[in-house]
Length: 219
Image 1 (spheres, rainbow, N blue to C red):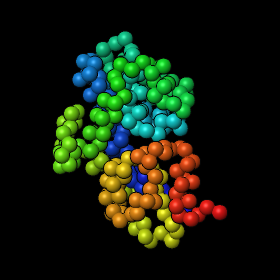
Image 2 (image 1 turned 90 degrees about the vertical axis):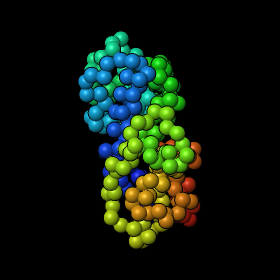
Image 3 (image 1 turned 90 degrees about the horizontal axis):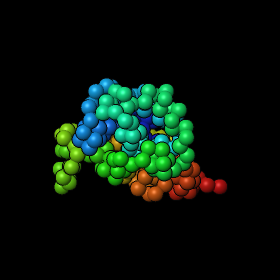
Image 4 (image 1 turned 180 degrees about the vertical axis):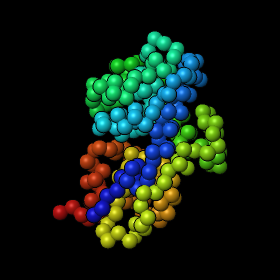
């Protein structure tokens, strides 16, 4: 059996989720905290440093963690509040498996998790996508979503793979639907996918075990 992740395996997401995090940080810094948006903000180097920690699989929680990190700094300058990527890597070493618990204990919760996650979701999908589905964005001002920057890394149909195929991803069902659209895999069987909406999150091995069971690949 072949089990794929989506981000960085089936799709190049270097232009989407890091940009969502950076934009959410600027939204919180300026619109929620009313501070000065100077400096570079969240960079791909911060993103790469965060991904060295296995608990930070959820990109929207990366945004929430960084937002509350900088919010806890006693400065109105984002440039001074932002830790360097190296410093950030050191800081998150103290995080265990429970990211929300660690963030609240380490930085407090100046900006609530629910609002940050909602902002990130809107930034990812974009106003046009959400409004076409009868949803009114509260945070996103861009018409297009950052998902439109994603590009396929594979030029093959899933039906051409000579093994049972599954997908185990930290995406929601709706985010996965967009990925499958970009891949032209719209006919991929949803019963062979494990997403965050199933209540199983990477890096838990339960998702792999479940897919193997569904495919009859368990001895």
